[in-house]
Length: 470
Ligand SMILES: Cc1cc2nc3c(=O)[nH]c(=O)nc-3n(C[C@H](O)[C@H](O)[C@H](O)COP(=O)(O)OP(=O)(O)OC[C@H]3O[C@@H](n4cnc5c(N)ncnc54)[C@H](O)[C@@H]3O)c2cc1C
Image 1 (cartoon, helix red, strand yellow):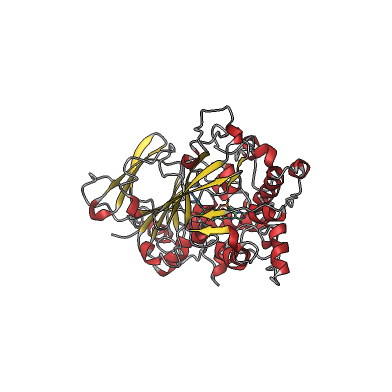
Image 2: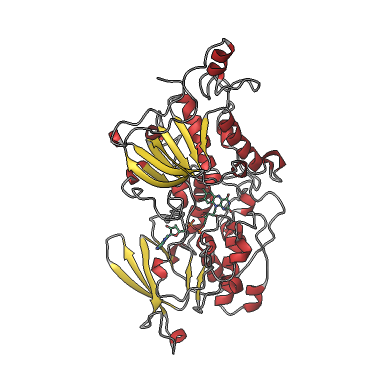
């Protein structure tokens, strides 16, 4: 929270926030349980300000949802009389530059103030000058596409009315959108697992709901994570829930499946074409949930001399520290102004956006970034270089299991799975009904539990994506 830190150092900062309220982006995932307990969600300087106003810290070991983080922490903080006058809502930054200088011009550059173009909600454009700029605008508004190669798949834009990017509130406001539909979830991370588990909960009330989980990874075990071997038991439990849903047939997995194009099928639903082990295959979907991560929107910074990691698009030199191939969220080394610096003195990116495309950012890391950057901008280089953050060895990424929201387990043999539940392990069958038929000497239940691939031309109605149904 750079605002509190800069105020404490006698500066007069101004926060330009595109939304109308604090935590505008977090409100979009308010229903999602976080991974971290309260203890490492709050910033020391902010807590000190809040405590002076009589605010009570939520229980340290409880895990908030995004909504609780906003309601119990960000709203009271942003409402403090010391902070409120320094925040302007409904102010979207559309460009940052140096006054009178484009990106190319060097001589005298650092003597010029920064200039920020800001669009208000009324459409009016305003210009602000500043001696320093901290971009903490996150990545939430810039999701990765469904296309496997990083570009939106051909047809993806035209299908946007059937695609949700992020984590929809499947059990809340968007229940009707997904109930009874064939829903394709794209992505191999925790956001995708969240969506898959919530859809499985929905399927219990709306059994016709079909859940297809698509990922590029060929090894689905990588998506489950460490499970019982995970140093963080609750996070392991989330992977275990996902595995149970897959093994019970409640969720069908297409892995590896690389989405290459999205077409509109009859009735407005979608046909998703991709590569599976070198073979082109087409699957139906009424809806897609794309949870493939986020990337920074760098367009507003076009005139700023950025120092970015070539592939992560992370700030300064932190790329190797946060490369998701090497680090889990608990093992990222704390870092500050020195590692975050760009080739533009006085300009910093902090928070989720500083990590570029790396998905391992933690609030606690952001608080340390803010502390260090505020110190550097006010000339306290000793404090800027100091590392004050100590991430616990474990306990950073604990997860409140989504199933805990309901009183009964997600996977019950009869209710939540395909055609009477999973088949006995010793019988080669796709579900209990299939096994019973085979045991009785019949060919089986006649319908494969595999999601039916679309065989007909795309102009014809797609086959219903159901199991053991005619
Ligand atoms: C589902 C989910 C769960 C997470 N769980 C955890 C967790 O358990 N623990 C943890 O430590 N981290 C977690 N994170 C990661 C991270 O800590 C959060 O995403 C955090 O909100 C990032 O903070 P931020 O300030 O960088 O960005 P954001 O919270 O996204 O805030 C950016 C703000 O900038 C505003 N903005 C954007 N563009 C502009 C513009 N052009 N002009 C003006 N304002 C603009 C937005 O409206 C927004 O209010 C989670 C993230 C997600 C998505």
